[in-house]
Amino acid sequence: MDGIILKDITYTYPGAATPALDGLNLTIPRNQWTTLIGRNGSGKSTIARLIDGLLVPSQGSIMVNGLAVTEENLGKLHQQVGIVFQNPENQFVGATVADDIAFGLENLQVPREKMAPLIKRSLERVGMTTLADAEPGMLSGGQKQRVAIAGILALEPEIIILDEATSMLDPAGRQTILDLINKLRRDGGLTIISITHDPVEMEMADQIVVVGDHHVIENGPAAEILQKTTLLRKLGVGIPTGQRLRDLLVARGVTVPEQYFTEDEMVKWLWQQLS
Amino acid sequence: MNNAIVFGSYVPGSSLLHRLDPRTKLFLCVAYVVLVFFANSFVTSAWLTVALLVTMVLSQVGFGLYWRGIRPLMWIILITVAFQILFSTGGKVYWHWGIMSITHDGLVNSLIIFFRFMVIITASTVLTATTPTLRIADALSWYMKPLRVVKVPVNQITLMISIALRFIPTIMEEAGKITNAQRSRGMNFAEGSLVRRVRRMVPILIPLFVDSFKRAEELATAMEARGYDPAAPRTHYRQLHWASRDTISLCLFAVVTVILFGLRIIL
Image 1 (cartoon, one colour):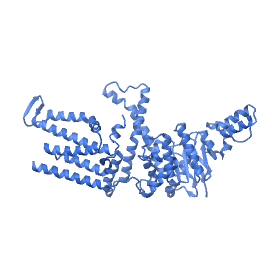
Image 2: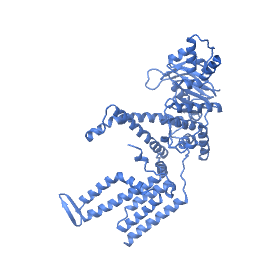
Image 3: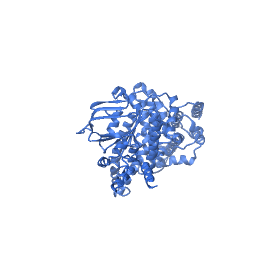
Image 4: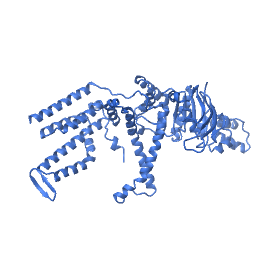
């Protein structure tokens, strides 16, 4: 069975009065980029942690590419699912970049001879080979997040989850991470799940899942969900530039085709109309 | 507050001493400190000083940098020496006032203490100047290995040490930020009596503790997500390599030791 299937999931944080997730059903397709959006505290991060087995649901079952999320499968699960967390500082375990990437490999008991080439290759994929011996204090937030991604790639995972991984970075750092994820998507073989409030990141996804009120509110292709401006406004997330421009044009009585436009597509369409 | 206190002592380089295995250097440093207590005369002390000077030259670290390592501790040394001079008795009395007196034995003792202090601090500075803190931690965990037999969780302790070292600069930075935040709210850290100043540290320490616990929790989640299981065996990326220069160093040290005890017997 392909993809990630969450069936009838209920999860309550210890000490909380209401469940974070209540009877949630969700299927995340394999080898695609799915973005989870929703207000803070809507349960997006809880979903990410449940998929990796970091939290155990009080009810329901989860399958990750045919692997049941259970106590016995945790080791395999942690290898298959990599999470990049929000704070670049608090997920850097090693004393140097190479040591940090080695950390995951050490946990998997990869023999030492095999580590060096794996570390080198994953650093190449994130474009950080020259900084292999750098200490975390010498790195920017964006570079630390790239190291976190390299650490995950070294384990050859099937799924990579970005839990607001770009939210603490400056615009340049955010762009390098998004470009990197885009490149990984093109390389293929990876299911990408991102949790974000950033309209640019939402626009890059194939699928968007809207989470709210402890369950899934909407689920569909990105182009379809991003057209629902009223819903996006209600969620308090930003509206992508192309869509906002389209809405403004429609409000002024311009006829715009009934289709989703990214910023670039909008520019192209406008040029066509004007020339 | 800056990292220099903890990390600043390492001087990058590629001298023979830099390339020595950290286990060798740690052992030699500890053994040398022990030897210092066996030096009982001017000649034996001079012999150990010569040995130390040779290693200092071999380390290719400027003497100025060594002085910088000793300087912060100078006050402690001077006060100890002063106490030793003024309050120890025995031998010929040169001067006395109340309970204080300067005697012959007091002067000799204080000279010995001064020598020991200087030499021990310099020797440990040679170690920390030529070895990154992390490598010293590696060496330390190697020496702890036998403790596994008595069920000491050596691997976990090693990981704890390395994480603690890695987070020192981060937490220092955080402390700086909190200090500035409190300052911007009108807190004045530079005025008032000592007790008041210490009490003003509380509004820095509490947020720092809360933040550190939050960090620890996030780090624990991230480590678990990367497959860390404290109970499971792990492989090790970082390894120590014993080279012939390490064996030679140990032999040279044995020679120094033999000569020291030889001098003790002859004199």
